[in-house]
Amino acid sequence: MSLFKQFSKSLYSPKHIAAFRFQSIGKIIAYLFFLAVLMGIPAFWAAAVYLTGETSSAAEAMKESLPFLTAVQNQEENKGIFLAAGLFFYYVLLSFTLFLKATVFAGIGVLFVSLLKKRGEYRHLFRMAAYSLTLPLLITTAAELGGLTYSFDYLLDWLLTAIMLLFSIRFLPGIPR
Image 1 (cartoon, helix red, strand yellow):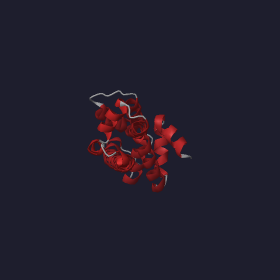
Image 2: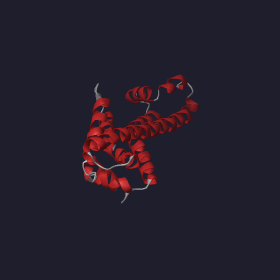
Image 3: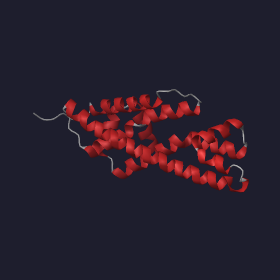
Image 4: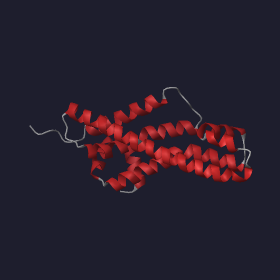
């Protein structure tokens, strides 16, 4: 199944998320890097507008996303290099965050599996957690692109991820008696 089909299925189908647990770890890693690209779109967009137009809203977005650039704003000739380096490190940070988040939710998934009396190994739960990140990430990224900010966005993000993982775990086979 293509990356985009996996993305679309993981937006709404806990059954497919549960089925994705058998994919290779390489596909899961590629998927998490893909999610990091999607999550970085607001910063990449603000950087492109900042380089081309120097509008005040883009400059403010850049100060919020990549604050170290304010120290080098007066160096016009180096601005593109610093911006590219900053965006690269921002992408690395986003990737690390997603891997860490999938790891934490896989641990939470172990608890869910034992409470629901389902069969599931940590490696399967890591894969399922990676796909459970999709819907909350899309909502958060869309809100950020739309300029919507709310004080409980991280709580909502983590809650939606836990709910998607919990619904996906319901499709795992039960423990034999």
